[in-house]
Length: 99
Image (cartoon, rainbow, N blue to C red; front, side):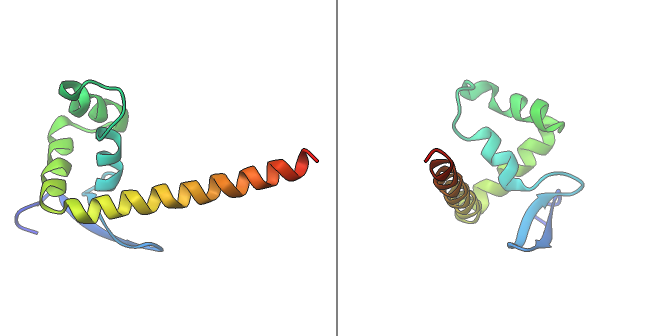
């Protein structure tokens, strides 16, 4: 991919996912940057520290995200949905134990 040379694609059980070459998925990086309580001006450096990446690699993920926002947002939304389902299942099991 000429516009994003640091990005590769990995196949997995959830389909084809954008990732940094030798690094985490783009969605993992964006999920670390977007939201949260870290001031905006510190998010890139904080994500780099947390994920063991250079700021340049975080910037490469941001550049990809800027061009493919919908794809990454869909991945993050699906992850949130699955996490919510898992939490609801856990809560149901805990309620059964309490009776």
